[in-house]
Image: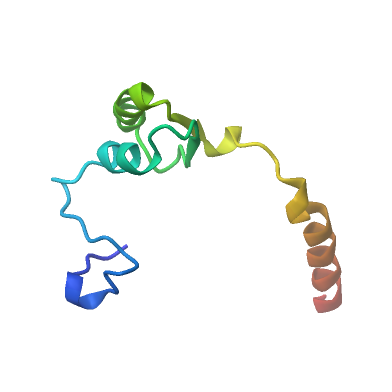
Amino acid sequence: MSCRRPSQVDTRTFEVLQIPDAKLGDWLGKHLEGRRVSVGFDPRLHTAAMVDELAKALQPKGIKLQGAAQQPRRPHLGTRAAGAAARRRRSRIR
């Protein structure tokens, strides 16, 4: 990820925030409050302290954190079909 100035991005689509002044918990809380949602995160990219801090900030707003390994499977995405297709492509390459 690289830093961008407002002149480098479409600010109608993206919100440019100053880090570390802007806290992820504040932004998520502002945009997701009252929706009773879970926010997924990759536990390999975040320390336990970061996750704990974020969870504490989001808990009063009814937002839960869910590690990527804990996320439910989505059968509508066709993961089995994609796996089979990938195996067929690999067998053609060999």
